[in-house]
Length: 60
Image 1 (tube, rainbow, N blue to C red):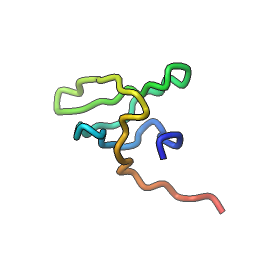
Image 2: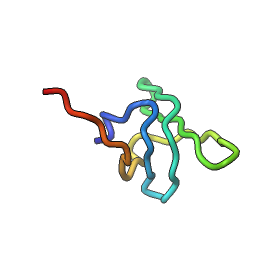
Image 3: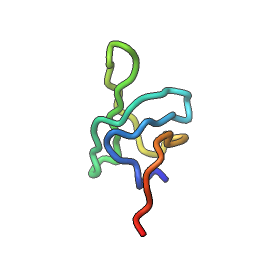
Image 4: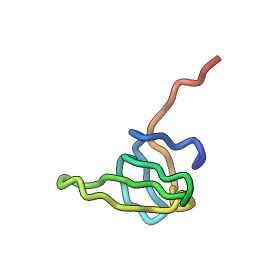
């Protein structure tokens, strides 16, 4: 699940922070999420993702 996170996905962290992924830094295993009405950006580690709330179509 964590390895398949894409830019634009809505996620919830294990700490309860909800946001949208706006950047991915593969070399550091870091996601940049945007949260709140003021669009604050937060860097989190990929292991901190609790769930991905965006449903993607599976290719057949």
